[in-house]
Length: 165
Image 1 (cartoon, rainbow, N blue to C red):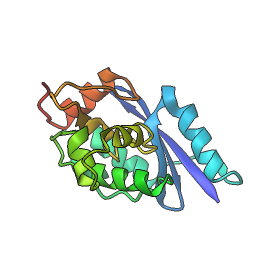
Image 2 (image 1 turned 120 degrees about the vertical axis):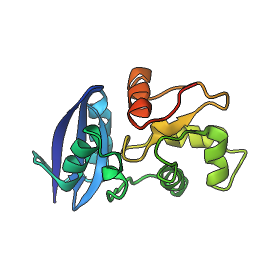
Image 3 (image 1 turned 45 degrees about the vertical axis):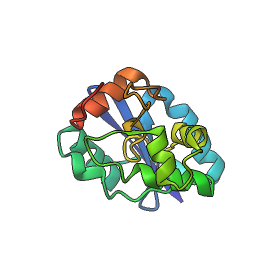
Image 4 (image 1 turned 90 degrees about the vertical axis):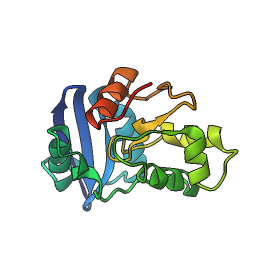
């Protein structure tokens, strides 16, 4: 099987995508790409990587240029544990321009007390931006962390029209 990779220039830096068999398996900023590639290679050790434009890369480009809903229905293949998959699915339900707290996310996956666990799963999201982990903030509305860096989280949230604390 082939994994197609693509680079998209954004105001926040180069965003990389990897698509396999019609599903996005990785999406992240170039300076963190090696970690995502290692995870995908663990899942699909025999696959061949090559550059190429895909439906996902075109949708990412549309998103960057203002069509914010272009990425909403992209198919993803995240791997991960059952719990992580539930968290990542819940992330995709956070409305554009809104943020949730870690508590909100824990409630969405059916375990209000699992705030640390959802935070951990959020941080391991292999398909950032498309699975919008950047939309999760602290209970007081402050940004908290973001694997791609807080400046990128600010750009993504501002790009999507979210109000920042």
